[in-house]
Image (cartoon, rainbow, N blue to C red; front, top):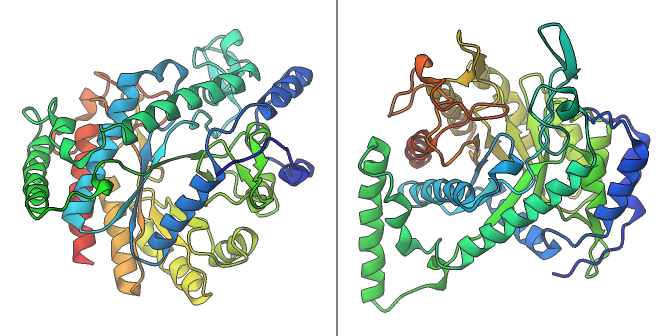
Length: 449
């Protein structure tokens, strides 16, 4: 699992191609200094861990497992605290327990965590009261405050992203291997939640069932090690290519290139140009790769992406994350799945029900309706059921905090409630109650397949 620090020229072939959504760094020399420093830093993840995730995603692609991928829309440097990280992890562990037990399927757990500090934007600038400044592109690039100082892209922030990601991963590893993720903790993950929430009460009933099952196994003399820790992987959008290539290393075991900034990286809807830099970069590394597919994606696009990113047709190498919108998924997804399946490629199909369902409330808050999120997942399952293919998982923006950013859900949040705890820097996230609601509903859909 060792990765040496040699930077291979193959990780920089993207530099001759157009790269969408890159910051306009004002000081190129400062950027070069930061890149050189990042190239000397140790890896955040190991090649062997990336290989292991590729194997797990291979099971998803073959229809033997389900992917739960979730976390913040955009992580923030001021939220790298134990409480925030534990709350996110706790929500994902609870969702994973629901899907595993109620859906009766092995669940691969991947966080949008420890690297999700960069965001693509629809416009390069933002204007308020006649003042125009660069748009906020995530804490890895500039600050959220609407001032010239904060909004000027600063390459020193790339080093802060590395250190924040490192601190986050250290804590996640401690939680997932140090006893916190032990299945016998299913009640403890819910203690602060059960009395006040319908989804918390429903989860508590499931936790009691899990307890009984564990006690039965224990009475039979069985106490598997697998119940005491959890495999948990990190992922983020590989957006800022200077950062990703600075953290690309040659694996000393195989000579292959790995992006050691995270176990899995994905390419967004705005950066998946077939002749662009992001696809070229992703084609050179051995990590599992995701690609977001919006409603404009053609079957030909999908097949070309497979040729570029998965020429060996290796299950687990390529994940297609569809983000169509509730009103479009049933029309646009079937042809993509049919043509890709007919080609013989085994990709993992994952539903991102968040990004196609955003709208602006009268208050000016960007939000999403829980019912739209749920309907897109329903459409995703319906399409796969009709084609006899595997609905491989969900990819959601969520937080472990009781925010009020998406409307609806069992603890219904109304549009007039949005201002109460609207804390996201970019896109609205499901709160913990809404995330658990979704997990129960997805588990039911999976069982009905």
